[in-house]
Amino acid sequence: MKMLTLNTHSWIEEEPMKKMRQIAAFIHEQSIDVIGLQEINQHMNAADSHLDSYFMPIEHELIAVKDDNFAKLLAEELQKLGSCYYWSWAYSHIGYDTYHEGIAILAKRPFQADSFFASTVKDPRNHRTRKQIVATFNQDLQIMSGHYSWWTGNEIDGFQAEWQKTLAYLGEFKGTQVLLGDFNAPSQLDNESYSLVTKSFVDCYNLAEKKIGSDTVNKKIDGWDDVSESMRIDFAFVRPKVDIAEYQVVFNGKNQPVVSDHFGVMVDISNKFDSMS
Image (cartoon, rainbow, N blue to C red; front, side, top):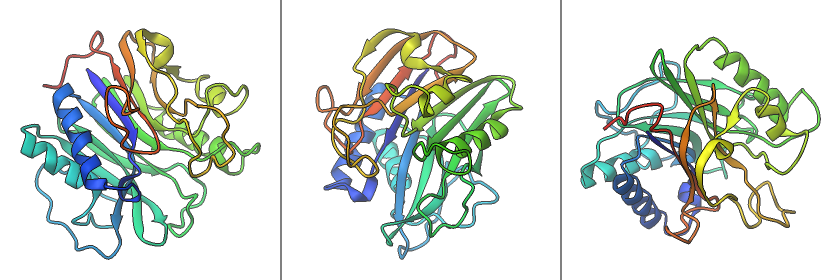
């Protein structure tokens, strides 16, 4: 089973439609089973969309999916290529005074979709409002797409508080759980966000038999204005431990074009689960 995580930057990128089509082409060519996407935006003033049966609704989500929702357009492009994906989207906060910013999951199989607030703040006008989306396929597999805040050094806000809420939400599931996303958690920093996550989950990078690439950010981006070195802040985590055949950094300008201010990560855990094809 192949999984991909990518912070798309969506409408903030130059030539976003071209990059969306490049993402779709890669997903189609690789026949990726599950995709976790972050910074999935839609214009607040766009028209409400008419959704087909491939959309997996979340009952308590109140913001309508718009016609230019980046995940919706990606799913439609995949259909044009001959790959049909079920998908869902959850709204977190207003971005750049222009967008509904959210998070999405796409999968070849239908799933039960849910979302939860990881942040203590729940005001969509506050950019620190963070919501994560979860796809449950059966009693054996649950996958989250997440986007987290930075380490703050206290347990009231920031990553620490969001992670505790995440553990509380995920705690009762008995099967395999995979967390995909932008964790804003540099792997080289000890005793901060990455160390906290790896107390409960295993980094798929460390489990992979074959590794292609490592870092997912190599320049200054929003929230990391003082970055002076490449960082690995986008991850696939799993519990319990499983065999990972391959871990590959994608969309880094080497084998695929750069499509965002983040690179993506693709993992293959086909030794554990059958493909959804």
